[in-house]
Image 1 (cartoon, rainbow, N blue to C red):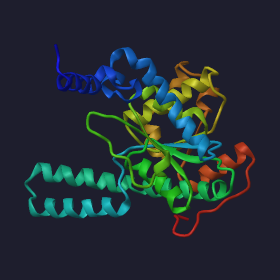
Image 2: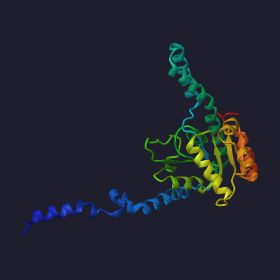
Image 3: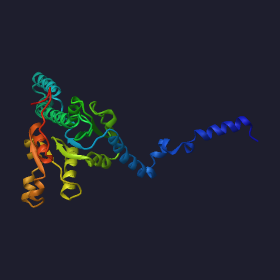
Image 4: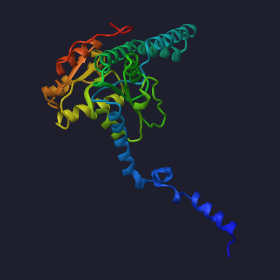
Length: 291
């Protein structure tokens, strides 16, 4: 027969067991394959709850490469690469590094355009009780950081939808902390980025940017979502990356499909497109912006 001490020890063991934990507090249980539907539901619900809490009425989504640096950083990298190439003229890798650094420096002006656009938009639509056109990004560095930074400099809220990746992507420091979300599922992340979107603004980027762009185009083309402005920054980049005219000529898309996109170079052009589409009043780029 067990002693009182043995029974108490057994009772403590029961309390410490994973089976005894409250289900929502049992992280091992929540991670089981059988709980995938619950995790999906939680990732679906959480951002919506927070956006309602902070009064976010609508958003503008900004996509673009995580590899585009601010001009001052790109300039410093270029100077370092140039010095290395001059010091080792026979070094092929140093010469290639210089070419890459020069290319990145050329793209760095898009960082400033994203920053300026986000600040202009935020100053016009977020400094009131009703928060419209809140800047939303994938939450990472590069163009995403620039857009969140512009909203931050305007004193406005902005949203970041980060994602768990093999090489962890840290959230940029300019996202509103209460609106910085961390997703496991790409599908739900992309859904939330578009759920309240009133425009998509895309800067040069790679696979992720193209994936997000074509998903939106497909949803609009097929009537799954209402038409919204789709604005691409950088005529030279996009004319080489995607030949929309060729797709029309070959009958793969219709002329109206190609008309879903507008290509611009400056933040002011993007603002004008939004003003025309939604019949908004003019805005301007605030102090410290790129005029």
